[in-house]
Amino acid sequence: MKKIDKFKTIQLIVYIILTAISCLVIFTNKDLFHAVALDNNVRIVCILLWACLGLSFMFIFLDFSMYGSAKRSYRELDYAVHRDPVSGIANRYSSDAIIEKYLDKPLPSNVGAVMFDLTNIREINEAYGHLQGNNAIRAFGTILSMASVDLCFVSRNGGNRFLAIFEDGSEAKINRFIKRVESKVSEGNKIPDKIILEYKYGIAFNKYENLDRITDLISLSARRSSEA
Image 1 (cartoon, rainbow, N blue to C red):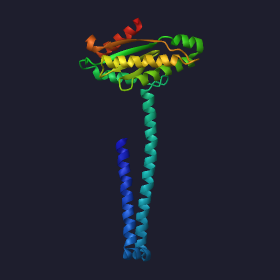
Image 2: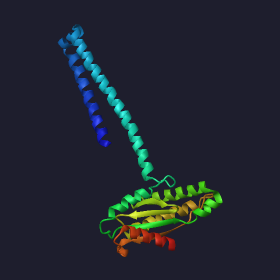
Image 3: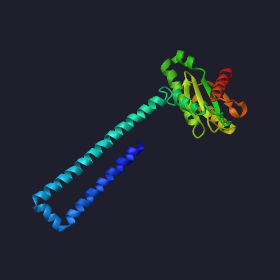
């Protein structure tokens, strides 16, 4: 889409330059100006050429309008495909796209996974209703999204589970991420009348696990989260 946008912009600039040159030539050349003014045939040719230029401008602007509409539709489709509608962060499909990168190759030692369980979501649903449960999921998703900046990829893994994947991970990065999450959850839980978020997590860092498959690494983080 960027190529189309660039091409249409160049096309519009070319038409503007040609139009400006045509007007400049006509109005600065007295003989040509008089020929256009006095000779019907020359005037008809000029009118037809200007009409073609005008139509070209119109079609280019229509193209820009249609392109803008298509771009918005593409963004909406991309959001629908890759974003979880409840949490507002990436969905399982997006995390699968990252996982597929490591399926047919040895798993690097700097890949890590952290699985989170939002443990009190059932209690929230029973006490306040599913709307508040969804709000809690969205709040936790927002926390993970903010905590992950410059560190890792986060997604909702379904239900009350969330996954963080570190592709260029280290102990320091994972610990920084965990501390950010703890800090933001703690801050949110101190707000009066706000629903308390409770969670647990499991970490698997391949530097110490020496696993061959990323799916095994994620499964290990999920198992550790369940056992926490």
